[in-house]
Length: 160
Ligand code: PNS
Image 1 (tube, rainbow, N blue to C red):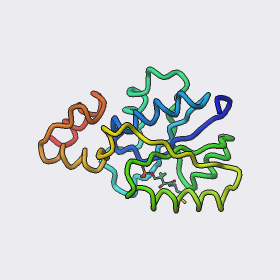
Image 2: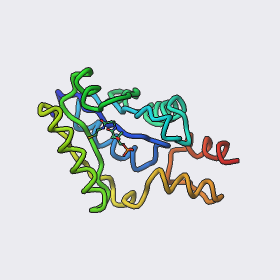
Image 3: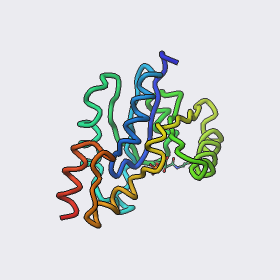
C-alpha cells in the first residue's frame, strides 16, 4: 500500500484529535495522504473553509507526507482528478457504520476503481466528534485534550 495516494475527506469543522489519530494511521500506511476539506460554506459551518484548512495545516505540520486541500462537488471526481485509488474514512462505533457503508457503496457505484478503506481510531476517541466539541465550547466547557491547541484557541475566540 505504500505506493498509493490516499484521500481522507471530511468537513473537519473543526479537526479533532480523533481525526488526527486517523491521519497518523493513514500516513503510516500510504506514501501520500491528502486531507480534503469539503467546501460546504452553504451548510453554515462554524469555521470557514480557509480557517479549517489553516488549522489542519498547523495540526499536521509534523507529517511530511500529509497535504491539506479542499474540494467541492463529488468526492470521487476529486479523487479521480488527483489520481487517488483510496478514500479513507473512520469508523468510531457501530452507529457510524450504516452511513459510511451507504456512502462507500455509492462511491463504488460511481467509481469502481476507487476503494474506501475504513480505519478505526484509538478507543479513547470513539466518543469524540466535531459536533460535540462545538457544543461544549459554545456552552463554556473545556475541550482541552479533545482538539489540537490551535483549535482550542480558535474555538475560544469564535464562541466568545
Ligand atoms: O466529515 P463528514 O461531514 O462526515 O464528511 C462527509 C463527506 C465530506 C465525506 C461527504 O459528505 C462527501 O463526500 N461529500 C462530497 C459530495 C459527494 O461526493 N457526495 C456523494 C457521497 S456518496
